Image (tube, rainbow, N blue to C red):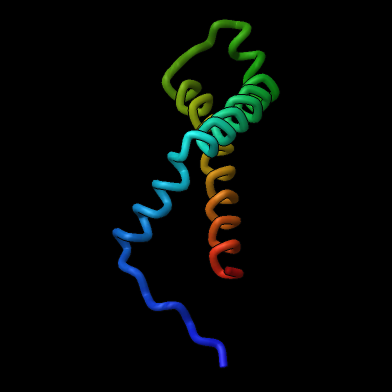
Length: 89
């Protein structure tokens, strides 16, 4: 018979996630991923606007989201892997 682990409080889960995400080794890797992928996305999608100096608020938001998105995705993958390891152990 498979027993489910006891339920945990939301605050404990958030703290566990923050502990994993903010670990210096993980943070260095996820920030590097965000920088590389975000830079590529910005160059690929917005190079013409950037080269013509067409900076405005909507473009700034798009540029920021191109860095934020891979940061969030890489952290989601990290947390999923951590959970998988915890469930196996």
